[in-house]
Length: 356
Image (cartoon, rainbow, N blue to C red; front, side):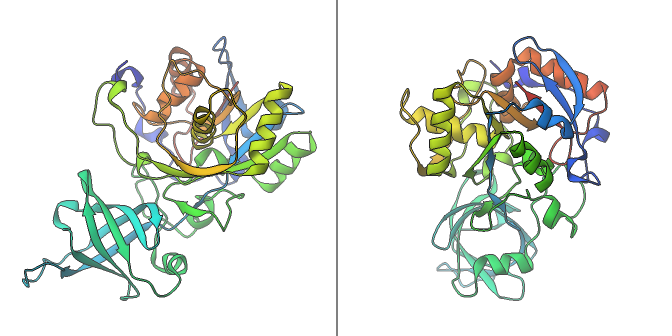
């Protein structure tokens, strides 16, 4: 299959630029992945669609203020000539351990290996260790004050490039799920299907007899890098770190044994669960941490996930391909055409779909 097989036309005015007034106010399009039948509903109807005994799995990764602005101190090379000045934009995309981070740097062509970047009022500095393609860099930050506390002070929320405005104070809370874990900081983008939930909705779901469990996958570079190939067979995603906790592994194993549905909230949760299942095919899931670059496309047989809540995704994106793998390309593209005709709001701050 080709990337162009996953194109759809989207009027720009349907791309949501701000969150809805209330978290749970989104519309929700339901899709029967067997028949393709569609129904227009609202996110508040989700508890009615879930069944007693379902296992709802959330991604509790916390978005960090990963968008930074730096100035160039100079090169740490044999040359003593001064480096050109100018503002540099840095998007942290993946923690690599210690003080190392993978990042996207703009304008990347100007930032060389050995150069030092200075952020804020000199409180944070980073040396460029490696250069990759398309502006990717590996940075080593100086030790000193608490890194994440410094990010909270000088960083900006990493709103996607299709949101054509600067981040606002409300994005600090609204571009963050209510169940994000303060101990699980590391995402460069929100797991957006989770943005619709409120504590009241979660309580209502659990009071119905739905079990709730969590995984962690830190959303990284793959969210931001456009595809530069045409054949799906040529797509290779960047690795993203994840953790499958013991209680979640146990809950999934029990649900699958008892024939109960596993409902994934978001494509990040789907990728984590299906990657874990692929490690030891046919065996129960075991708790562990690792990295995944799994790419799910039509033809893939899902081993864990039985239903999916997700937002609407970009044309020709790997996430649209994942949803098409789950419910069928024709069904999904028909659902997207219906969503456009019905004026649904698209992407991170937009409406959602429930596929079962």
